[in-house]
Image 1 (cartoon, rainbow, N blue to C red):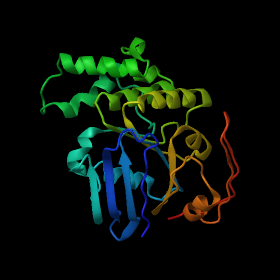
Image 2: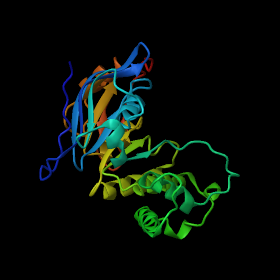
Image 3: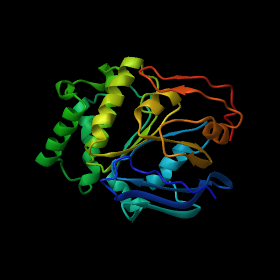
Image 4: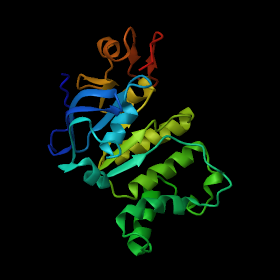
Length: 267
């Protein structure tokens, strides 16, 4: 069994926000996650890398209470995942949508308030204040009445981030937050996340090994099992365990570099 603990860099806060014990999860007879053990403390900022099919998105589904464990236990702020997910804000990958659909930035962000009210009840002043605050946090107040069809990829990702913040989360889960974005838009997103991490715990998954290793506090490699050494540096050993015959070099500088040999990305 692989036993892992994500330790917070700043030990002033010791409260656990996520605790996973002996987690096995998957689909039908396919065990995508095997013997996962880890804990996340308040204000951690953790990056998870790994090959396609390695279980990164499956892990997020379990944390969000969308996929029940086959074995093991998952607690979010001491609650079962289905109850604890109300404390989680989720930012998906940028997805293709019908750009002719008439919806503006304000209405998209306000969707984050739906879970804070009874079914069919109207939005109120408090909702509007939280939406305004979320837009301020991602610097999009001036675009609040802009149609989302007119936004750039980076602006749209900030809208999704604001929608997650409007839920008043204790934890943010981000699935490939800079996928398909150019370097300038990616830098803006990472700067925002650094600021948000001062008051929200963050877990993010990414294929961009160099970028994520230079941004987060600690990094783990996930390929059915979780490999972690409690640092942001990604070692050859970690990549060998997660990717197989991979060799890697990550240079932590203003422009991270990496050299990766071809690796098997099958299940």
